[in-house]
Length: 186
Image: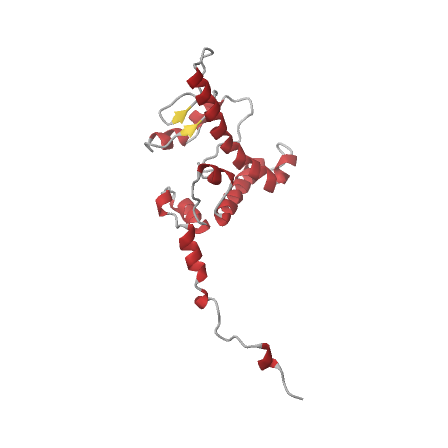
């Protein structure tokens, strides 16, 4: 997603599989086809779809097509930023032995925890770049539980969250005493 959360995963799949095959095997095709107005950016390994924008492949590209390909490449890299955070926070995945470690399971857990961290922080590199809000952790978890996507318009604003935590009346016990009350006369 443009906000940097990874919302769909498929695997494990052999590295030599073509991107188009992986796309066909995933649930993204059906999901994206039903969400009119949303687009994904892909590289040349993906087929052009109404919801999947890919670079121009004609070797005799026009200046505008070359500029488009350059701009597309700049936004496609955002997907790699999310994976970079996963590798940074959970470097243990890089040292695992195939067939001796539950790599896929641990990668899914690492992705989930990275998404949670982004929601707690309310920002990540992609959300800042695309100027997208992230859900609170509670909204993200509720979204996972419901199986339905929660529209960004339903996310609480940062001001709403700050206002919620600014009200300290619920957090204090009302039993605050000063240091002078604790002293006794000898």
